Image (tube, rainbow, N blue to C red; front, side):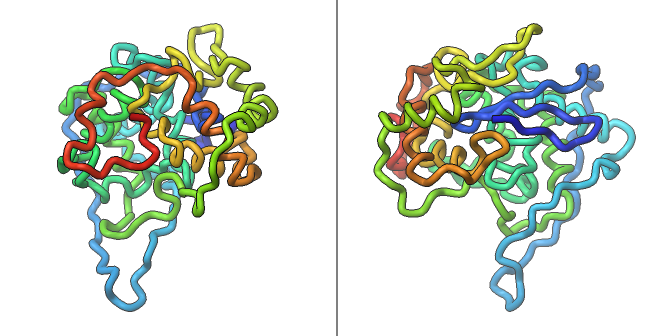
Length: 303
């Protein structure tokens, strides 16, 4: 299960899950720049999709690294790319497990059907049923820190949050608001089969354990990082994470696993192996009782 970040000098080895989680071995960290004002988002055209000829989806195109500007804004963009690729190493006070943002958002958030961030700035503000509130992008980032990272949120006005938003804004340049991006999120499997976790254990042993270990503990590097992340146990994501949901995990596995061989598993195999590893022991989420206060709880939620 191996995949490479395509960012040239920013290249990172991305850790992915047998449920779709992965990590990286990037270049040596660069010093964090001094706090800067959040960069203004590039001007976006609002596309009226009701008009004849309007695109239903915008193509997913990775911007050229040469478009990263010089100066403080460019420094923030590069710092943000580093933070999402080495989240555990760069933000140890906010990450409570062995994961990075790019464990799910592959290759720096540029891969279709692996939670790409291209165009993400045009999606927010967004109402989410999980907390029954209108969320801004900073809320969504911190939601991942608390759930997928099993950690603590960043200060919304911190230099590190600014850097992450700067990176996502740079990725989103030229994408109009109001049009979904190709490959956004995780492409759900239609007509989901009834999962067989016992068969999933066999699939895991054949397709996933070489990277993530027979006990799902992942593979650490000598410097304390993770070459391949833990899929369950204390160093994995908690039960409040999106990847704890069966449909989400199966979709990620289907299109991205084994790493470099996405799309080779059948729908049944993807559901079986997802059902196997998401039900393994993992950290709890203390505020789970507050989720979906106004209803709308998905059928595959863990609690």
